[in-house]
Image 1 (cartoon, rainbow, N blue to C red):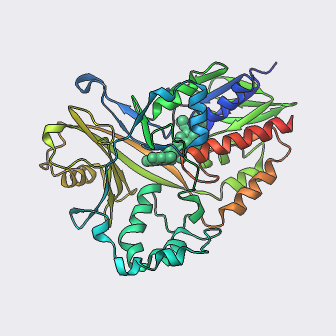
Image 2 (image 1 turned 120 degrees about the vertical axis):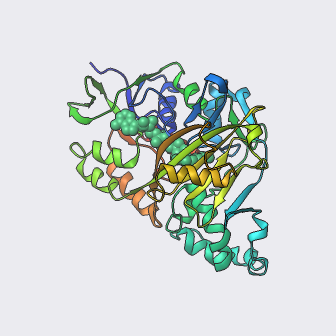
Length: 400
Ligand SMILES: Cc1cc2nc3c(=O)[nH]c(=O)nc-3n(C[C@H](O)[C@H](O)[C@H](O)COP(=O)(O)OP(=O)(O)OC[C@H]3O[C@@H](n4cnc5c(N)ncnc54)[C@H](O)[C@@H]3O)c2cc1C
């Protein structure tokens, strides 16, 4: 006898949205999560202690009123009233040891022809570098756009598919343009995980997948879970490894996507110790970090927080701390009394022409009661993950 109707591996937004669709259709969905925490890249560090309710984002920081499928899930959970508008503050560029406004770094004459060059330009099959260099000009691309795109996807963005960034989507007018929740974006994952029909098994790392008659069998260190349908919602490299035995061709296809690593370090400091003006974040140009994301968009009366997303392997931890002190204009030992937390984030390094790769994966999935969802399909944004989960859930239902 199967444990549930749908087994999902991974309790990030991809897995939880998949579980949501199953539960909303009256199915029993179990989610296996290796951590004790749900959310994956929705990772809000909550400090407690003398920092009271202060939190900062170690992963995703922004959700928007254009995330229609995500909002529909939150609406079904009657959680729209928990959304808090993000204060609109500028991102600035950090280059040559100083903070600059973005307009001050643009080459305006080169930019003048951009609207004309946009006419009829197609992103399909183009890399970010090929597409945007042509539109904004070489100097603008190098000075502002490339560092900004690197900051958005936390990896060198030049080879990324141009249509995987800034997908146009309709905006909901009844929701703040950019929002977070009390406790940070991880609260969205916690809200979905608590929905009726969804059961999250925490501390269960899937180690192997087999078939037993019509059922899938997933083994963890000390347990065995069975279900007639299975959804993998784990990073692409983990999915490739888990599918090696039962679906070798699919595993081989997934193994073609490489992974970008980000060394993220979050710091919380008393407001009084910082001179830095309020900002949404900093974009690093020729720096060891892609970006610095600030908590100023959800201001706290006593504390400020910054998460530095470092390029991997450039600085050791002492170097990263020295870099943080330099950028935040603190004395060298200024972080000694700060609250510092770290996390290694992983994101797929998608490449131009990714649409063909998705087509090949979907052909291999056709006819299977196996679903693949995650941030390695249309794009890495939260909404891309939820959209993929919905499409895969609809396909699973068709498969019977
Ligand atoms: C630094 C950073 C900033 C970002 N900023 C934004 C942003 O502002 N806005 C936005 O829209 N997007 C943002 N993104 C992208 C977005 O957050 C992610 O793409 C998305 O949350 C990924 O969700 P996921 O569920 O596919 O994967 P993940 O969040 O990686 O979740 C996968 C889950 O699977 C679990 N798992 C892994 N292996 C196993 C196993 N063997 N068994 C059981 N469980 C397992 C993991 O513990 C994890 O919980 C950001 C990402 C990063 C890293």
